[in-house]
Length: 146
Image (cartoon, rainbow, N blue to C red; front, top):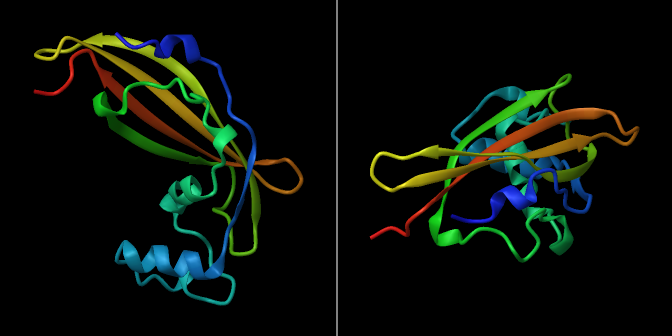
C-alpha cells in the first residue's frame, strides 16, 4: 500500500487565487451554463468554479510535496463544496490552503485494498474569514491497473 496515512493532517503552503470576471464567464461557458448571474458586470462564480484553484497553486502548496502517491494508481473518487456564505464574486482575492484531512482504507472486491484520502482546500477572504471549502476524495489502488 502507499504511505498516504503518513500525510494525514499535513498542509501545503498558502497561495492566492484571484476570482476574475473573464475566467468566471469562460468557466460558465465551458460547463454549458448561460445563467445571467455568471455574465454580468460583477458576476458570482459558479459553485464548481473553485476547482480552477489548481491553476493558482505553487510548488509548496501541495501537501504531498514530492512524495505523494503514485499517480498511475490514483483515482478521483468524489468532490464536494461547502460554502459559508454566497459564492465568491469577481474581484475577490482568496487565500487558499490544502491539507490532507482524513486517510482511511477499504477492502476492494477485485483490486485489493483501496486507500482513500480527503484533501480539503480552504478559501478565505481578505479578512481571513472562511468563504468556502472543497473536499476532494482520492483513492489509491493497491495494485496497478492491468
